Image 1: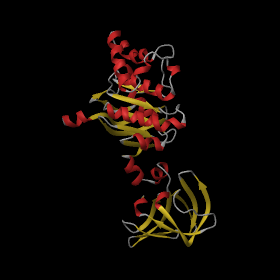
Image 2: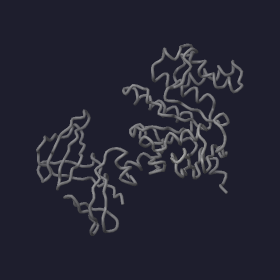
Image 3: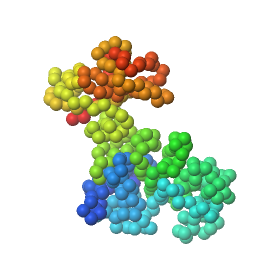
Image 4: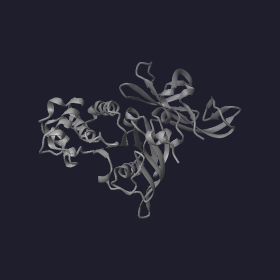
Length: 343
């Protein structure tokens, strides 16, 4: 039996959850705990099970096997209407014909709160999230970022145990995404919300999350902080999916990795080994046996395709460093902080 402190601190718990659709398994034995007040992102490629996991929390899907607990209560068989969960949809799902204030007050009203009190609660939330002067506007009169905040306010006003974000930036212009994701993160922290966020965008996940669940084929490939996943990937899949990585096969002998022209100190047992090397952790210097095959200008950085000992490597360097040209001979200096032994 769990102690009361762990129950109090755990907002959501999956216990061996399986979700099948006929013979297809969308979620396969999912077990994890999400703490109160943290933002956890489900991340992965299409079809990995991340959206199904969100729908299971919302009550829009029910587990085939296993248990799901919210705030210590088993909700595995409860419909969405019996769960204290708020949801922010991709499309915002705002009512176009009523004001911002009425949109936010709608949830409390249908739950039995009298209209004056519901509107007071809505005004308070809108003021807190910086939309105090927009109460009477229609959603169509707001920017995309403002509509996103209204959708968040509508979820917050009901004081949910959990708030769910389903690809919330998919309809926001690329130039606004950085600002809107920062606003979502700030609101989540200000209100101490437990939030579950689903996205396929790795940078977005790294920017907003306390912890990230990377899913692959319905299972957890790795669960940890953004730093854990980027700096200590558990597999080649994680290393390549979270950011860019050079995946290199070779052998470890006497504490050194030998392969494809590289000779690096690597801890662990001797034998076959696979390394992940982050492109930004490779420094280029003039001269040497490696060669620049192509150069790509990306504004804030330069990307180089480099061949070394028959091995093709991606190298990323700040724009402020001296630049190299295609065909230049270079030597590689690899920062050990960007090297992970994957096996």
